[in-house]
Amino acid sequence: MKANRSGEIGQPPPRSSRIFNMQNHWYFSTREGSDVGPFGSREEASYGLQDFVQFIQLANQSTLKNFLTSLAATDRHQISA
Image (cartoon, rainbow, N blue to C red; front, side):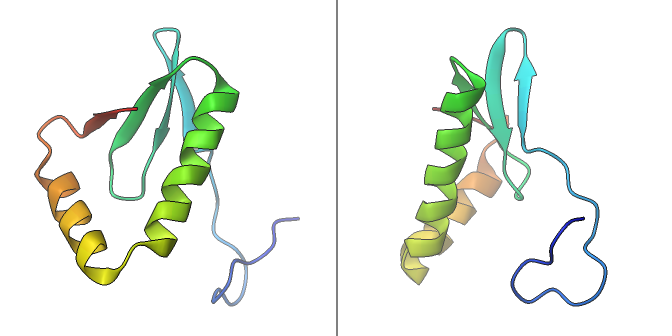
């Protein structure tokens, strides 16, 4: 059974893995629709995702706003790790 995340009420929505393999390289996808990678292994992509989430949680508002604006402006929506 899946648990609710902080702030969620009721039945949790379906979840999918953000980590995926494409052409023998590992990536993770962000909620903003960008793919970050490539990583050499699933484990490295998992660590990269953890680092990304920590950055989002700890960044000050100005830095976060600039980052998300830059991310949205990225044509390919693929960020090299």
